[in-house]
Image (cartoon, rainbow, N blue to C red; front, side, top):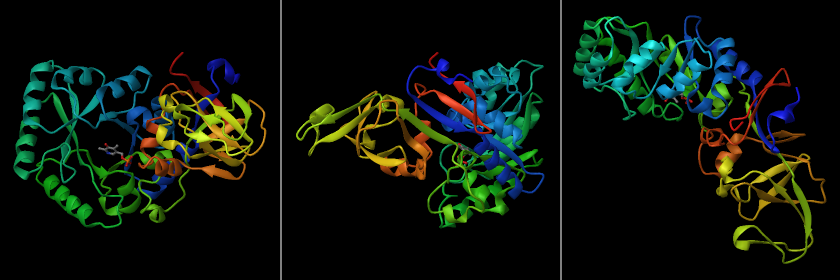
Length: 385
Ligand SMILES: *Cc1c(COP(=O)(O)O)cnc(C)c1O
């Protein structure tokens, strides 16, 4: 494939779909046969690319998808995805007909929502819903037995609603201390037991709980971060029963190389000063790509050597200090492997003082994504053109 014809800047992210495949397969092997994997592809699949990840996850054994908002579900339908899609977040009651039309499953947890949705749903329509329980996350969901009873009755009285699932979300499944997790899990079991009819899907496990607690698996899991090859938290990393493969990497090329003399300055604020003769390279990535200013001082790889970012990161570019003269056009690896060196998403997250989840999510749509399959570029997604 002629790659360069699909984007015209020397910066791109690579998403290795084989890694996604392996990660989903590994999780599948870990689970009892009847347990379904719901691949969580919200936020453009954590920045990796919604439809590409969705297809790969489904191919590797996931049977359903989940997103945060209805627009994300509609985008997947538009791109030809026919698998079940669960919207995990709140949807507007007036949009229920759209969900029914596109066979999108909604998360429900308010009586008033249901009453309003009834007014917006045609008589011959049918929409699948999952009840959300708030067992301690404090975000969305029903919190008491009485409310669950009430809600089930109301839903079951209206044939247009198909009560297909019930679920909750853990706040601390990735922490070594399991007290709060156990508290949430017990409340979940208690609230689920109130139901007169158990829906087809009962699910509570995110990646962390899936990898750590067999007991909480029921018959479906919601797999997000681990599918992308990232650990839900550093503290639970030793508990992961197989190795995860990071799918996301970020690349660029030197577009300018020059020699500075002692005292010459670099970038806004002129905060960096050469202490002698120094080779400086310019990399066309900046904070508008999600490579935020906090990454000043972070190292990147040039010919397998770690070199530091010097001076402030600009909107579209930053500078690095090179050990010697290097030709314009030399590859720069911001995240990923180069020769024997590796800059992990976790390393970048640490520098950004955040969690690994945030790193690929904030790499903006100005950065084209290359999809790797069998070691070759299988697809290029340029969000701009
Ligand atoms: C994002 C999300 C997940 C996925 O969590 P990971 O930690 O990425 O596996 C699961 N369930 C809900 C409700 C979510 O919002």
